[in-house]
Image (cartoon, rainbow, N blue to C red; front, side):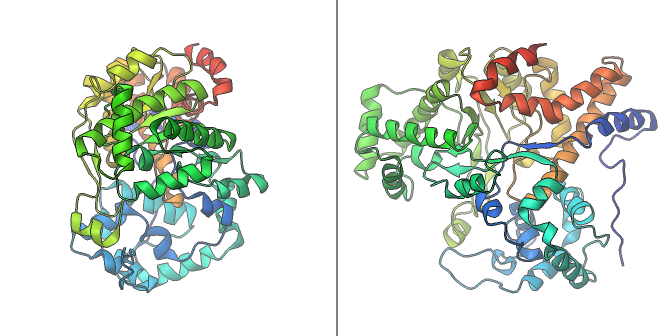
Length: 483
């Protein structure tokens, strides 16, 4: 039976001297609390606080990193229990799903998923057996028993994982009822919402009219015209802020943030209401709404997060069969310099505006993003995101960004996951990679070790704290960051 043990120096650099320094730097951050400011765990998971269903539903079915790797080797989504949009038959036996995953464990060699899953099995589940065809049933039984323990409920794991603050990402049409329940349970300041308006600002998208009606009902504002639409969005932003939100989140195909003439914005909105908006007008309106969201952030202080450059649901047949966000999203090239210029010319030096940029296009790190963050006080660079949330991706980020933007024009590490159990693993990996990068600067006599340790603590804890500070506390945060 294959044993699963985590090496204490995993992901630290090779070479005794470099690793020794990296180890000391990492140890200074290892026990710091986790700030999870770009999260996607459903708020209901914490509000309900139910036991996790089974190993397959916990670690396989909802994890798109896992399922897409298996699909790439010919394993159908149906056999992994992923629900079909039409309610058609899929595998319903969680043990069979788990066996398929374990039979393909070798596929994850060299991937960040392997690192996260090993950490989850050993450090979180306290099991030392490696997945494989011969261990699948035993491992399933051991995990199932662990999930039944009272201390393995979501709310208890907030303490186990040392999570100080975690955000959920919620549509603008969310009632925020789950967050109200969390507030009643005393967790409202620890689990907070993030405002995501994409489904409303992408006019003409499937279901848009229905969501617009929900917006009107929730806000109590007539959305019959464009001006009412903006007023309703402001109303919802205020509701999110009152529920503890610190940020907004915007996933667009491009970073274009070009304001439209008011007459054009009103016309396109009216066309969308009538069901006849053109694709080019819808794209222009989405860019216009990014600009308007920035304007609103200047007013209400919510931090604005933008992550463009992903073509959603690339596989049309899978999208049709399984629904939105199941059709395998694929990155496309991104452009920020021209796209963000109107927004940054208008708001880039506004002391009330804070913009955090994410990308999956590494080619823009040194060419565009670092120079932008290196000059506009409002801009911070988000952590390596999605396909770049990996050991080598994190190293490349530091190498490409630091020389122009430094460390202190970044957000520090923020995870981006729906897989709750993987959150400690992701933070641990980032801290190890940063320790390795900083150790090299120490041995190259570019930093003292004391400076490297201080920087590592900043990246792991202080910078996320500052980047996502509540609006009321942001002035003092700026001063501290500049010290």
